[in-house]
Length: 314
Image 1: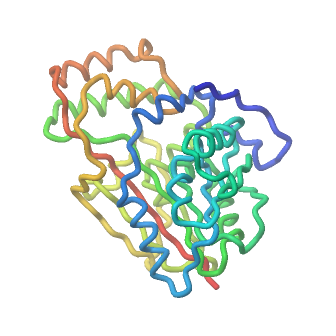
Image 2: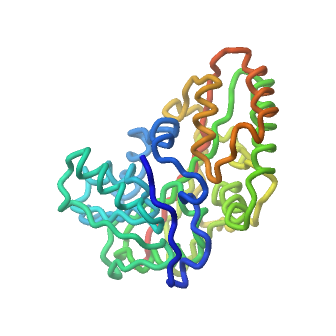
């Protein structure tokens, strides 16, 4: 499934290197095979938060950083229309192909926009729900959060979500080898865009701020983290927490919806979905160590997930 290379744009907000782009070796075919599938409970958490508010509307959803439209497809079943946006060349075209031509969903349900999270053409105060799944760390979060607030109706919902690489259970040796593997991986994955993304993602988005003059009812849910935000960290880069006392934090352990049993070939396929892509031969020693630690067996994995909900103040 080929995706055209990233093009340069004159838009100042896109002067920053685009994250998770074809330039970094993104392959959507591998992504769809090896990445976790969003379970029903993932969407139920979003919908439950949104539905609790008096007068909650289900007219327009905006899937920001939509990629090939994975989240957009499920949103289309609940909302009257869905805006599908992504800054990278080719992604919304691919999303339209998968949603309309292959899934046979009505094109009238969607609006496809190639634009960044930080600067949208969406009219102010028109959106009921914004989802930013697996993408906010590739943005300038303060600017993106401000733009989301502009787009939303008063009382509208923002759902920011992120899952990190899985943790191995039942084999301390395999988990240590997996941790050592990532240490080697990030030695090869360099660049300012990567470092900026890691500083955000490694905290489970604790450093993403929701100004109290703009947002209320902020709820942060952490799933399968073993009670420690370090579950999200893939290297040593970090940044200061901006969680406020008024925000609710919920810790959920043992969520089987984000668990599976996998072997070495899956681990290799999964790593190929990360950006930037690092050739297997460049870190062959780390792969060999992990394969030895797995002893030819499959192991149980649990994926750490952060889900952050916020409501636009009236």
